[in-house]
Image 1 (cartoon, each protein chain N blue to C red):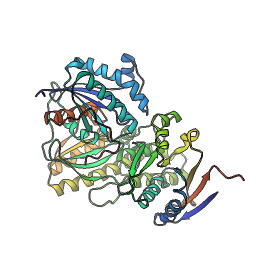
Image 2: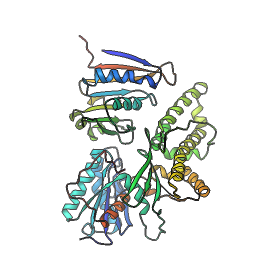
Image 3: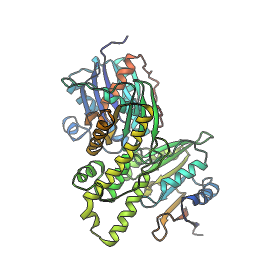
Image 4: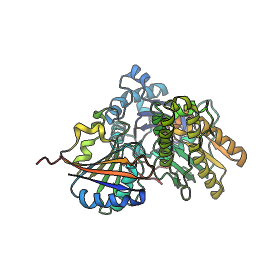
Length: 343
Length: 149
């Protein structure tokens, strides 16, 4: 028996973050990611890289998500959980926990593809906020620490991979270059911040030339490394003095690569509905550049709110919502798949 | 024993790949890859996996920590990147021993943090630039434990 206005609980534990959210009829009631604050209020530990951290975080995160949503566990209609791709040990924690909850409450479990969920994050509604989602079919650029993909989205369930990175992800290039510059991990936000003070055209780094709509971000990482080595030989304070210009130039180049292929894909598929998702979608310059492009090419562009860009439970819950309404639920035999490929 | 192979550019990488594939992968389950950022650890892994028949794209596991690939014989190959780990225990938490116990080939980038959890036998591949040139590389292959006899 399924409801038309279901309450869905979404659990995400595929990588670093433990996050749980509750949606009622597509509308967000709560979205909680394990953090110092959850730790203070409900116990558990600050996120670190480990399935053990997920294990100690998951119960406090659930309790806070239920409390914030003002929902009792027996009001939940289905549990959506990331089944892959991701780190197996971390996925197992989320899936096993979801199974326990589903069995105890006699409700269905719904396995979700993490990459599909990043895209469906655009369809999360919020109370008292305008809802403006992309219209099918649209192109989605998903950029994060682990992924750089262009996907054609035909409907909630049918998606085609048009292009992707053949080596490093864009977010990884940000992180590794920031490490060379002595900035803390994760480096994307630091580069974004310093780039605002620098000249994006001061230094020129190579643009990778990949076939079709594919990306490569390994080359810029190496190019920046040689560039820094060379400059540091002449001037040991080069990084210190030039960090803003280096950050601005690196960011400019990475964004240029991302957008070149996106433009090409938009032209080839004759699409002007363009959505961006994933952790790198919070980058302010990427957002600026896309706004410029959308004015020029008459695109309608869509960015999820920051909390729905990074890994989060709400995107898992929204993907679960659509699968639930489509009566596409799993059984208790659901197993995580670290190598899951939706596309 | 150990040996050194110099190459002028990535086109010659097959020399190293063939040597490792013919001589070492049948003997060693664990291959450690040491080298600075951008020396070509992932590029080497790509070429090796390609020559072992892996059909999928091999991409960097920095964010995912470990990627799994299948050979045509349907056995798994695990490609690790432990760059993001801060403590050795995190390697255990992510299931390092489970991957080891699987008996499958494990290639490990940034393995320094694993030091106390290494098996008795492994192959170490150290990649260094030659004269700080952009394309040439020196690959040093060393078998462990070292034979002191």
